[in-house]
Length: 316
Image (cartoon, rainbow, N blue to C red; front, side):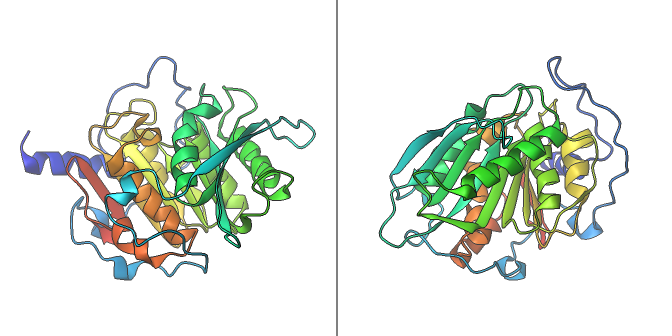
């Protein structure tokens, strides 16, 4: 395929219009028509490639800087912190369905932002294990939460995420003393990706949300939180044309939003150790949760080969 043709296909797919990639997988959730039409994406975002402009990033809220000066290579590997884990039991009274805590071995006085993860349709919580290990090693307290059942739709998962946030900030766990409860983020995959966007609508105090291959029955989300969306051009479950693209376009009110698309990525590209996707996801969390502006250049770096990236600062 010629280079210009690939760029055109990627641009259309990223916008979620005019391109059909086929029916969802047989074991995927049903795909009802969206209740609302997503708004058009600004014409300035039509091109998948262009110059990076970190200077246009919104200033992050104050946080706490951790670790050495970042490099591109460092973002693709385990970080400078050793980490430990703790199982947290189910508490049906509070709607918390259990999970595993990953937390850094801290120096005296260090405080870390918190992350709650939510898996997708039919997935157990361990599907999000990569984020527990990787983000804890870079200085985050991560609660890898479970859903009530593997078949919960996004609305139910949004409540599970909120209850997990409450469990994380309530304390009485081994990371209580090192968690900064004012600096929280959410990461969700598939129906969990839809769930974290719904939860973010009700929790504008969040610092950041990462929605991986999001699936939801509606494309419009009024979110006052910075959002990173990951998509895959070979995703036939939450495909770019029907789900990921329109959901990204329909995120309204976010001070910053970005869409990072893997042109050879399937529905699960965003939950594995893919250096191209995960380096930018980490930079996003570091910038908005920790307030570490050293990561701006990596958040807004030019798209690598086989990727496209666009954000509210412009196409990159």
